[in-house]
Image (cartoon, rainbow, N blue to C red; front, side, top):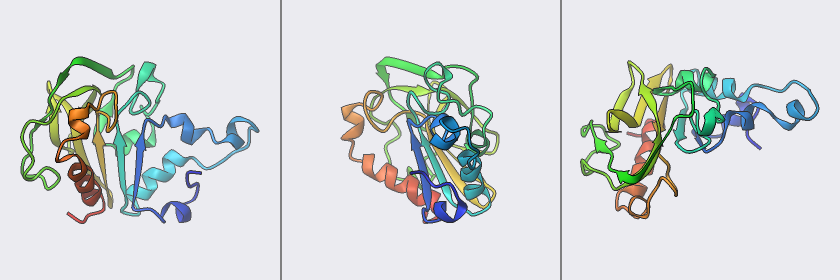
Length: 193
């Protein structure tokens, strides 16, 4: 079960959400089935990052950011407040069946240092808008694909495509930098780099 208290969540250095809609965290069974109040876990994550210096990563997909028909539902939530990107008011999925290749825009950033400028093919992403003080690391068609943000005492990152099929192709999943990418994102979020 996802933590409900600061004491519980502080056992972790980073929270990662990938294809987990906001209702999964907001509508605890006690709330949804029994109509009993429970802690707001989106506010908990924000406090965990901003006031306790921890890390947060959202990875794209049908139930990330706004997602399919907007059902992921992170627009205007405490999670959007800490993300490096602003979310759309609608279904934000961009399907690219012919494939696209993200381009690194900030080759000096420690996450992508020594990475090739052009990444393997991906098949889609969640459309977002880079926030003013966020750092863009990779993009496609002027849309952020990887961005990071320092907020309060903590750090956040957003990868707008998916780390798995169907948006994540075999070329991407088998890329020699794939494991290094995720390791460096986690290391950046935990202030090791």
